[in-house]
Amino acid sequence: MNIPFSPPYIDQSVIDEVMHTLDSKWITTGPKVVALEQEMVKATSCQKAICVNSWTSGAILMLKWFGIKPGDEVIIPAYTYCATALSVLHCGATPVIVDISDDFCIDHQQVRKAITSKTKAIIAVDIAGWPCNYDELNAIITSPEVRRMFVPATSKQKLLNRILLIADAAHSLGAKIDNEPASKKSDVAIFSFHAVKNITTAEGGCICLNLPDNFDTAAEYQFLRMYTLNGQNKDALSKSKGGGWKYDILFQGLKINMPDICAAVGLAQIRKYDDDLLPRRKLIALRYIKAFKSLPWFIAPPLFDKDRESSYHLFPLRIKDITEGQRDMIIDDIAKMGVAVNVHFIPLPMLTYFKGLGYQIANYPVAYHQYAREISLPIYPQLSDAEINFIIRTVIIAVQKQFIYLNGQAIQQDTDTVQQIGYAI
Image (cartoon, rainbow, N blue to C red; front, top):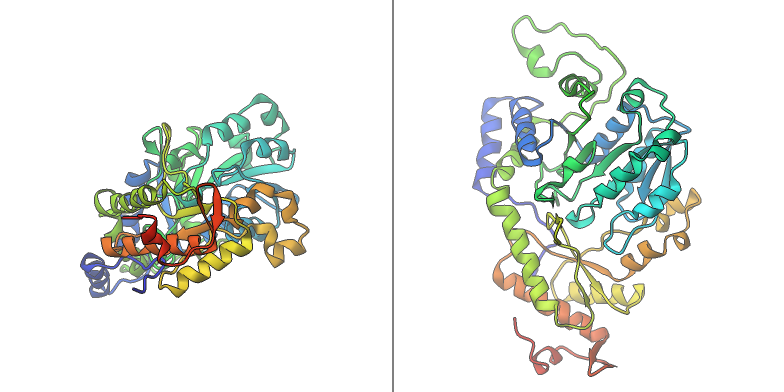
């Protein structure tokens, strides 16, 4: 077999929705984008949703909206994709990188230690679809001690009068906390619709607003919509109507709107998400857990507990007692047998650019420890039962080629060992 890591879900409903867009002759921002925003409001129970052309653009927009500027600090985890930090840097501010907990999420105790009078926002990252402990983070930013440290400098900051909590929800569409959408726990949740995500628009993202009641969310939506269109007071669809050509530029915005041709792909998918696509991801994750749970080297990823449930975006397998080099050799062996896997993520302080800024991985031991033993397995709705079985078998063979513990002793194994120890799917 040859199993890719994460191909996009394209069925006839997606093709039909895209063709409908092409037949309409309207392919830039228009009715499909609005329809996708409405679906996101339903999916997340947020107040308003604004579609953009990427998660990164959405993060830059919301940081700028809040007035983040040079001299400000934004707290982020070491274990995340580079866009989390780059969005802060694009605003001229400083990413204050802190370590994570064993569940991959930002360590709230480290967050509290990192807060200063310069802290304007926290970006918490829901790794693999597992939502962060937002109750702890909210308790920190609303505590009297931390509120007194906050120094507002813009109208939005004065209105909020505390640190802004942003959820990097790129992985977590469908994640739950207390049986409600996890994104409701943050002020702003930003989702990714990149090609490998649970819902894709090829490239794209969505900002979901959950602002306090003293904000006029409808007005903020209109302002953010203009911000995505260079600060222009009319979108292309409005301008195209008879006599509607005249427009104005009200402020210095960005050009980061999502086009309808992209929204069409996500629109078809999101309509199947709760009843079809997400349950299938969960089923695959549970199949992996069942297959690996008795093996002594297996560390299960966080998928659900009494309060939280993942969106099953990734299956971050972790292997006990291996080095980074051994992990890399396991990945090579899995690839040679026809299964594409990945690693999520290389911690920011290990990347050349961030090392050049002075960040050192030695200061983030938990992030490094999780990274060094992590392998992300394929998990997407199109996987057949036979392919799932093949992935499981391939992973076990590759891990056991490095080492497996039988009767407390590490011994070398070959492909036949899987059958010899009685492994069955």
